[in-house]
Amino acid sequence: MATVLITGANKGIGLELVKIYAEQGDMVVACCRNPGGAEALNQFAENNGVDVQQVQVGDGDSVASLVTQLGDKPVDILINNAGTAGPAFDQQTASTMDFDGWLETFNVNTLAPVRVMQALLWNLKSAENPKVVTITSQMGALSLDMTFSYAYCTSKAALNKFMRMAAIELGKEGISVCVIHPGWVKTDMGRPDADISATESAQGIANVVAGLDASNNGSFWKWNGEIHDW
Ligand SMILES: NC(=O)c1ccc[n+]([C@@H]2O[C@H](COP(=O)([O-])OP(=O)(O)OC[C@H]3O[C@@H](n4cnc5c(N)ncnc54)[C@H](OP(=O)(O)O)[C@@H]3O)[C@@H](O)[C@H]2O)c1
Image (cartoon, rainbow, N blue to C red; front, side, top):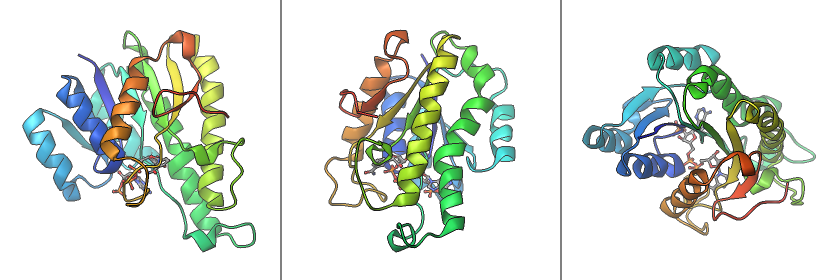
């Protein structure tokens, strides 16, 4: 039985990941910033032994409190899933930028996965085969030319670069690190016209995570198990 810690676990892809891991018998620590409003998560958690934790991933003190709660529990899999689309589309263009919104987008999408990973390093190193998985987006790929959502795209591009470097360093300590594009997914972020359901995306992500090891450390995956261009 693995311990799997998932951020942004109250809805969308994160909630489906919680269900998949709990139903296969793993111990899930489901983190979200407002558990009081997380009805679907709380209901599932009560019936399936999921540990729900209040964490604001954008805040260092909040992440430190999570680590205190966990104590010396090994964490086998960290899934950095929480993410924001950033400012309104017309406020993150080449000609107009909401700079405070861009900073907040970086804080949540880029800094927070690093913040959580670094805070949990001891717990990860205590596990037998630790994995750090971060949900990125194809919109962060330099190989994909896009001219919208500049704040979001740049936050995911920076995240990709950080995790690619971290894989080289942490891989030497036995930690597998990767980023995964979850597909275009029918969630509050992806909207109803998207290609796939959150359940399909999460199942694909869980399959990719199951296959992570030293041989493929530092990869940029698609949810369906294909490799994504950087
Ligand atoms: N849906 C897609 O098509 C798609 C495509 C590519 C990548 N992604 C990535 O997939 C991940 C999950 O997204 P999703 O589609 O499942 O979206 P979602 O249903 O909107 O869920 C987003 C999650 O992130 C949390 N979150 C948002 N803003 C936050 C903030 N400022 N501080 C802390 N937590 C915050 C949300 O918590 P609250 O409910 O409290 O806001 C929620 O738990 C994200 O990293 C996203 O960038 C999604």
